[in-house]
Amino acid sequence: MGALQKIVIVIPFFNESERLDFAQMQALFSDSPAVEVYCMNDGSMDNTGQRLTEWAAGHPRQVKLFHLPRNVGKAEAVRQGMLAALASGAALTGYIDADMAAPASEIRRLIHILEAGPDDLCAVIGARVRLLGWKIERNPWRHYVGRCFATAASLVLRLPIYDTQCGAKFFRHTPALESALGHPFHSRWIFDVELIDRLAKASRNLRIDPCVQFLEVPLQAWSAKPGSKLTAISFIQAGWDLLWILRKK
Image 1 (cartoon, helix red, strand yellow):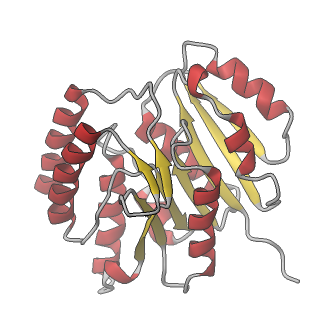
Image 2 (cartoon, helix red, strand yellow; image 1 turned 180 degrees about the vertical axis):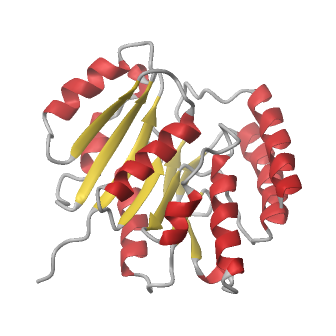
Image 3 (tube, one colour; image 1 turned 180 degrees about the horizontal axis):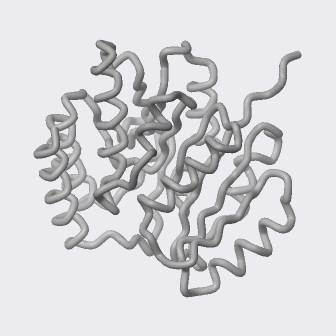
């Protein structure tokens, strides 16, 4: 039997002490020896760092904790975590939200789809789609604003993507991913769109249709948790950042 491929899940944290769900976080790797979790403590000012340190100490082989000296924002925390994952030899890496809105079972399902997919499948992206029999719980206002944004992002990216902002994305280790992570993102909030745009450009430069390299997978469970740091100003800034991406194309 061949060696297991290393998989690294990056989770950014900023003042998340009241929302930490260690049971779900542990379920990410509890019976998967190939999975490691990189916790990026992004300059938290509450006791997030202390709680993560205590939890990580109990799982020294599969949990790695990074204490960033100051708050650099979710985009940069994720970028640094994914770069560290690639440098460690991870075959697959990606990121999820600190509140575990997508449960561990769904995260592991996404990873399995990428693992089992063809070699030209480079990314699997979760999508929050409300369907009968599935448990997708979102704030209605944020859902409809998000749909407007996702439609605009799809036009900017020239990709039929449904949900650019779902916090569950995984990527195969490729030269294109290394290059896409090679310099910081412009946006703190919609870096997902920037990352997809960089990867799509790399595909098109090689005359490859990016639609064959990305797979969007509807989540069967996702539950919004209280305490989100997104505000109305965040949505306005996201719009400006999307215009910036469009101007750079």
